[in-house]
Image 1 (tube, helix red, strand yellow):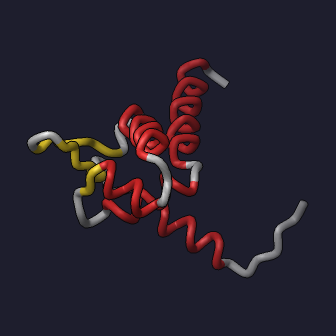
Image 2: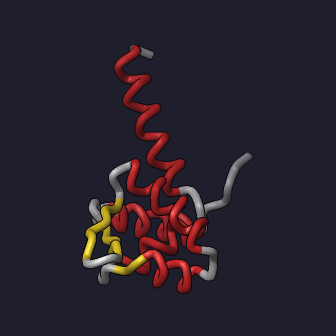
Length: 102
């Protein structure tokens, strides 16, 4: 595999890693229509604000979400809504009845 392709696939794999946590997937569903603060998100997911901040930082680092400051709070929203398309695709994969071959 050529180095440029290898680098591209590595970068794409990093995005999948950023998505690969139940709390971060839940965040998508919470902010897909509304901007929410760290406190609102941590309450919804039922985790500590410091842990929520770590999840949000991972998603921000991969440019999947963005924060917008308003007064003394930061509200988060999806920066790349097409991530929800992937979530729809994942649901279709989960609902398929094809047997899994090992």
